[in-house]
Image (tube, rainbow, N blue to C red; front, side):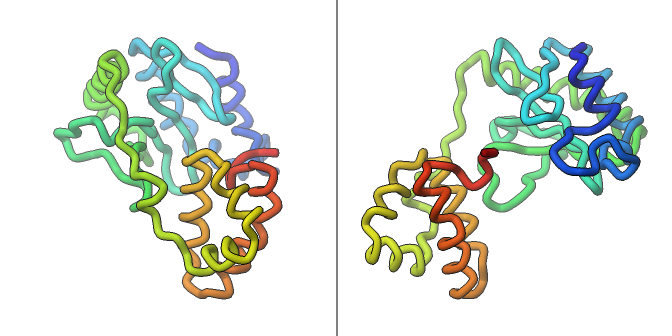
Length: 208
């Protein structure tokens, strides 16, 4: 057991002002979180805290996260797309989520009913790591390039150079963020707002 997880269950992740207050999302699901934790501790996973939430690893490799959200508790398998999912219970959180797949819970009864499935999926995820299987991600070139971004690239070669110097994952994060805006002016506004971060080599969701 990791004391950091005890702290998470007591006060939350601390990433927002609600941490340590009754309004923290962790306090919506105390029994669900405790039951899930007990199940995970019976597996071969190591309990850690990463990104301020409970993270379960095997030989230093991330297997899954446990996190309390507003509407449910999530067990998010980092390479869930590689799991066979014979029970059809894994959820792709967004259409653009390539690797992670989730199990979602709102009651302890749901956890109890899926206990054997959770353990089986954890074991399969461990085998995925043991065999060295990797997710085949889409190439950055396969993501939509907004016309507004291409225009700014043409007008500002230094900005294009800064963008292309980002890691592929950071590039994809920005491309998705820009493309989600429905209106051209909104896409342009998002690009301009992110330009300082991009010039500094910072990803959209990096903490700095």
